[in-house]
Image (cartoon, rainbow, N blue to C red):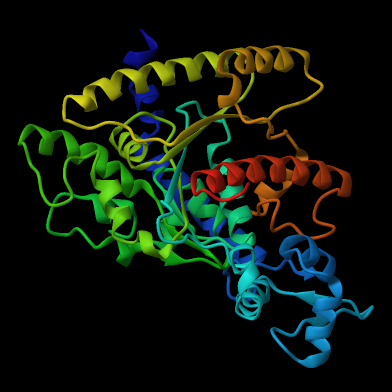
Length: 408
């Protein structure tokens, strides 16, 4: 008798759907328990890192004597003292200090509080590539954190159903979000659509708001074909116009929007590419990753032609490739990096995002390099990774400033 004809064997077959449901329930509960342990006492993520006066000298470009005078005179936010009597500031106090000094020094206001001015276009930056593991989310989160520390108002939009960006901000998608609380709520085609402002959430990180994501985002992929077939069109427009129009409704509140796209080229990714004013294409300099990136570029090119049939064109002010998870001592990676730089020249960021155990360790605690505190990772590994991240983000910020007509 064949094995498949044995009734006893058939009875032993698992109910796949039931087992996966059990896996999901157990893993979700464990993740929630881990969060409670990581973020006591209220199981909510907070920004715990503090800033020394030396940090503020570098960050704000003001002499330490000025900070000392403010403390002695009781002006501006007052720092706390450590056991060795050093003055430290919270991230909230850094923002307060920016505002206070900008009011006191109008000639330095643009540097201290560098929000968009009249005539400066909102920067909508999409990190894109449909190859998993290209560090899209890591790049998006580090860019958002860097910009917020520099004093910019940032909106993060998580368009990936896997919701890694959302999780990094301390929001567990299956526990903390109800139905209709993701970007889908503002993009959907029916009467349950919400205003974009309603789904934006404040985060624990001053200067950053987020539109969270979860599996609900997949509904946009399922709904869109039928609405296209029915020639449905409302005030938000066709599927590729909807995100751009939603962002436009809140643009006065932000300087930069960071879009974390899914690892696929579906309707939501196309909407992100159309809404974006700039693209950061993340690519790991290995043969398979570069080949996959090439397929991604081919598909974008072909789909751009399709969109033109609807009278739409991508309107990107700049595009840059970012080499990610780079090992500077890896010969094959150096070879592939050289090819990318030879082919795309100035469209490749000079800075590279280095592979680091510090980033991996931070990921376990759902922290970026800008949140890690002394002792959480090795000092040398942290220093190298932080310097690499700073170079990448500083270069992107310089491009933004040039677009705005400011000195980089």
